[in-house]
Length: 137
Image (cartoon, rainbow, N blue to C red; front, side, top):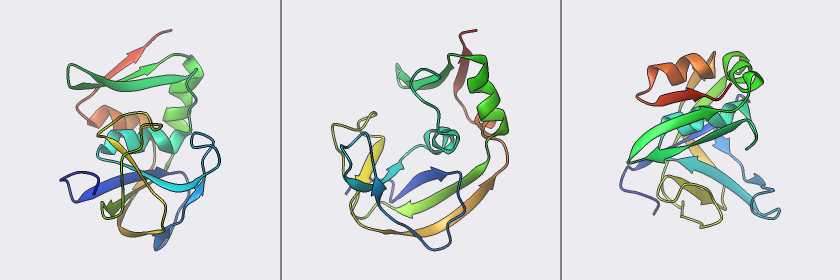
């Protein structure tokens, strides 16, 4: 089991009805997995599909932050919309190849969606969260 939260979040630019299906991950050498996180704000960032050159995020002294490295990263966040899916943490596990230990998890099986939330602008949703948004430009 991933964490004691009972639920995890998955962010996607795509509307999905009932289940999250495993997909090939470049991060995991082509293994098919479903990613999920304990943090809604991390799932929000995943909607925009930013790369490492555009954004960095994590925790400093347990405080969450998002660091935007380019002006187009902010534009992507402003213009990106999608969905936050809530799923049960059953079957999810940590994998050291995945970025934030204790916050990001994988599952090799399809996962039932418990709830979905439409997101119109990732940036505006991030502003509502209790996180620092840092711009490097």
